[in-house]
Image (tube, rainbow, N blue to C red; front, top):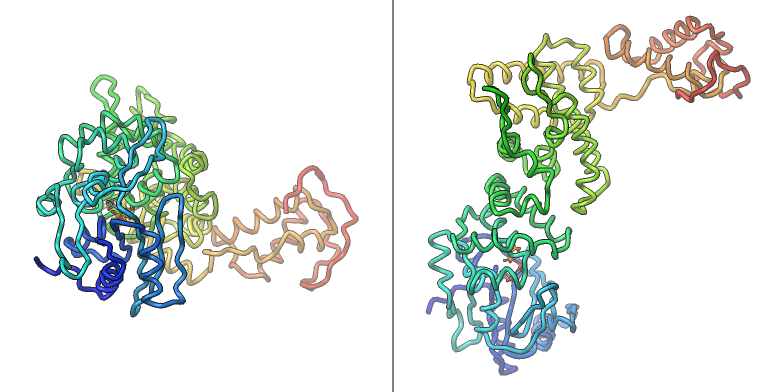
Length: 496
Ligand code: CTP
């Protein structure tokens, strides 16, 4: 038999297993990835005996300082081990038989044979084992034709798929994720079983589902995964908002485009340009507000007015359901969804400096990602139209660079602050402060005054005078602060 695993860690495990008189095998993803020549640093070891004892003995043989994490309830133990530049995670388990209750993912576990262990794995390509003991080192144990399926690019379960998926419904998502990651086809029987068992996904936690969704989004061809999720009936259960994009309604001869397939095309375009998970999420959600804003108008046909605002407001609920982070990453997705039409609208008209400055102001540091999303959003079949848009985008990009160099709008900090205005006019926080601030900001964005303090200061004095305010401290002495005594013309809101 070929010796297929040549890293010293496998020899080390085999030697320790020989010393303890137990059989040990590398199993699962590490064997699959070896044949696919994919880099894999997570090593799963199964042994006929105690996985915990073997882990502790191997760790002690490699380096007595290694800390072994033991999970007695699961009968597993693992440790990290650095070799050269690579940190390996090695996990040990004794071969097990498992059976599951219908309403839970928690298995009843007993000791078993290697065959029992292979039987309970998800796919034939993940059920191969390689012996690590000295006398059989490198021998492949492949009872279900895993190598054949790897060569043919097929995902199928080792046992009856209804049993495999019912035992652990997350595997339905894993099948689809592997299809997107590896470009494999799910065998018909296996796929039909996913469709039959789709409802069982409800017992899986949102966190685990989302881990798979993220892996699908980060795969080379995410659309494969989302189409399969839709086709199998999983998507309407785990992510109904995305599933709702599917379909075309017609009135007379007039239909709109299918926003599900359009969205997937946009995700693919973005994936060609960027590996960033959150930009890919923004692409996936950019039109999520369309079903809720769809209207038919006799003159205009189908419209989706305000879908970007509606969609952006849906992001938080979706992120909450899917247990995605509700932090700056979510804010970034909200922002991109909200702004995703702006560069297109801008490039449809004359590209004015003022509109480009406003775009820079609103997008800030995310402007490049927004432009990537917008370019990806052009999925028209009309080549001339696509060329025209892309040409205009080039112009927008050029202007963005020129204006940013000149006016530094990207991280706009008002050159005159609300506190300056209150001090100069001796007023408390009020509506007028906001009016003056907005007037200065608009003048800068419209190119009426430069983005500089002196010009902004003068404008503040002029705008204050227009509002009937008297400058009590007209000179710009940036550090002086005075208590505000006078009252505003309209003292109702704090506009600073
Ligand atoms: N496995 C399984 N059912 C699951 C999860 C895992 O049968 N729901 C088995 C498979 O044999 C799998 C192995 O456990 O190959 C290791 O699981 P894991 O590390 O989660 O997956 P990998 O297959 O290694 O792939 P990835 O790391 O990309 O998730």
